[in-house]
Length: 227
Image 1 (spheres, helix red, strand yellow):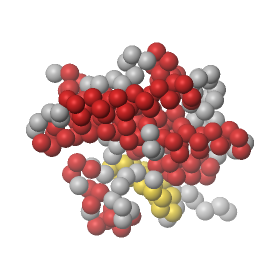
Image 2: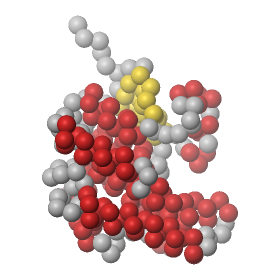
Image 3: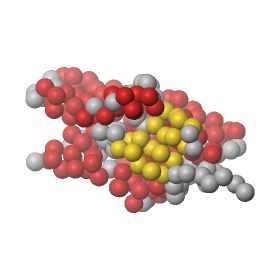
Image 4: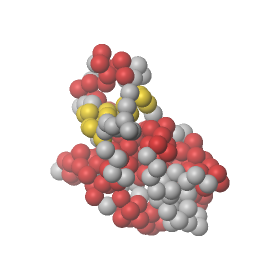
């Protein structure tokens, strides 16, 4: 008789881009999970209990039948493999899987830091200091992000509807969560980019309610930024 599998314990803060990606993936693929909220703004990640799970004091973290795993890229690929989800997420065929790995390797030094920097300058620093960031610093960050967006259009979306082919993959999930983040400050970084807007629409259609559910906190911040 097979041992009963417990739901995956998942430690998240939905204001975190990688956490949203993991949350969407779990819901979209109907993987049983128990949500363990970690409020970064309150310093929950520095608690002794959480530090024992992840000494780096970062989210997301999962615990799957006693197996503890950190880092969103590793978590998503583990879940896709362990729970045998549909192939398009993380294909078994070597060349198609390599395309997903190619993007996720590039993602961590391009899409993620460049989108996050705009968010930090326009949202985090003003909230911490009570003062707006110097416009020249924001402009520089936006320029760097635009370089990344150019590459997404010219390389990854040059001749296909999703970043790694004809179907949504982990690459699209990680990318969209990062590119949504500047919305918290009222900035839609895809606004004047028809190709990327069409891609975002395809991703949202593929994810349906899972997408909006994960972005409720971000939408709330966006609406406040408009006031």
